[in-house]
Image (tube, rainbow over all chains, first blue to last red; front, top):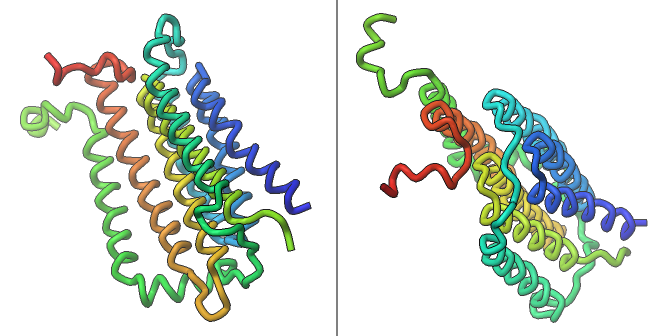
Length: 175
Length: 107
């Protein structure tokens, strides 16, 4: 049962990712990204990291994909050019893909990464309490810095996305 | 006891990472390249969670990997917001999202 679920969720993560890379329509790509993120969240849940699974769905499948869709529709760049006449440009990425995917898989399967382990130990990551304890004790400084980072990102986004950034000194007096 | 070990998760993570890398190199649409970068971040998160799950013992619960994933998710959200704002600003100025046509620094 566990194995069937694992392979189902792994396929749910990987197949939409491949289809995303090959998709012509950007909106379809965003939808496929949702499926891939939900598959990853299911894999997190199988690893008993339930809080991270919920966060993954809320942040990625919720906020990030909605932001992507909003930008795609704002830019009206849904239709993009196809791959015609670009065989030469596919070869190098394909070589990188094969190297990047085959080598780790071979290394893992050859047993150099240690023998296959079976997760019998308890999984403390399942509770939000553990996260809270660590975030406010050991990782207090990164936690605060993350808050500052989010503030900086928000201010930066508001500044970047306003109109007439280049014509700022002139337009300021009129507005 | 189940037969799914750490290696299975690592293989999925490495495949997901290489698919994302492939997409970033292959595609010319900046938005799709950005999506593929998100896939790569997800792959790293999956590997981190798998490592901290399979190395956990009752004495040493190995929460560090999970907390790191927490931070990665937060930073990725900030990164997406900033990157998409840059893409919007770029589109307003150059009216394109194709990386082929963004050659202002080349000339």
